[in-house]
Length: 458
Image (cartoon, rainbow, N blue to C red; front, side, top):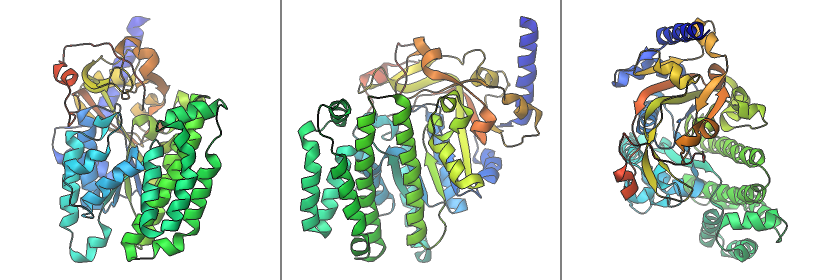
């Protein structure tokens, strides 16, 4: 029986190898992938961990080509809206003359290395140079950098008030009065969620809703003050007010079940993406094309996974449902190597050894395919290898926390890969993403070590 099983795996691995496109480390390796994704309006490019260099570097390279060769005008990240807006102003040449490193300084909460790393720093510099080099007749379509997430409750409150201080001091006073509701809970959004979620305090739900409604009602006055820049600044403030409303609900719900909060978060990201595209279409008078950067768990279609069968939706599923063939979903995988991750939430990052892919996983199957690095297109339904890959297998997901000793429970789930993604890029051995602030724990990590740490946080 075991010999028969092994023979079947080897046969399937051989078929995967035949269906794959080997990667040799040159830019032209990705020409076939560009052919697949360049005509889409939404290209979602994932990562199988929040701390792997090859995932970030390849995603940045693909995004550069989509912007420079295919007219994409926005990058949307699994990051908070106010934190990314400083990067957006830097790459578009707006504002205070901050450097790229200073522009990334807004990413101050855990896990900072997700965005304060050498790859994102280089990408921000590239995007600024690309935008600066545009001819005058295209300068209005400079590519921007935006965040989709909703964790920034208090930072977004401050951003709304700061905006209103500039355009409408009376409205700013009303906003301060409404948002003062949150002050009784300090500055920790999780404390707010804990106390209000268990009915130990009055919620600030109506205050957050009223502030958003007033801001939206004033849109005609605020957004037309001074051309495109005024529209951008209003949109930034309106999205922050939306974050406050949705974050308030999210933190209240987080103590009542994972599925509910996951769905709130990913629905918020999908709604923010749609609002941004509509804004860019309106301001720049033409259809916009966007790249999204987030974890595989957010970008692979949830309907193809055991989480989806448990009631979860995610950003990739929602984008496909709303935009059909205008979307392309690209995933990553690795067999082994090192990764930047923490032991526990809010602890410093370390460089950790990633265990070889488990037997029965896509990672182990791809390792057996015989190529160190390859691209596997998954839209060719008639392909025998692709058809066989539809049988559910284990897939690994490493977030910002990683614990190898509980890996099967913590990091693996069953999925149907060809339904989850339109293509997958596999790197057999990968290395840890390099943070801009390299801690002693990160420096001490060596490729041969297998430290004890815990997973989650995608």
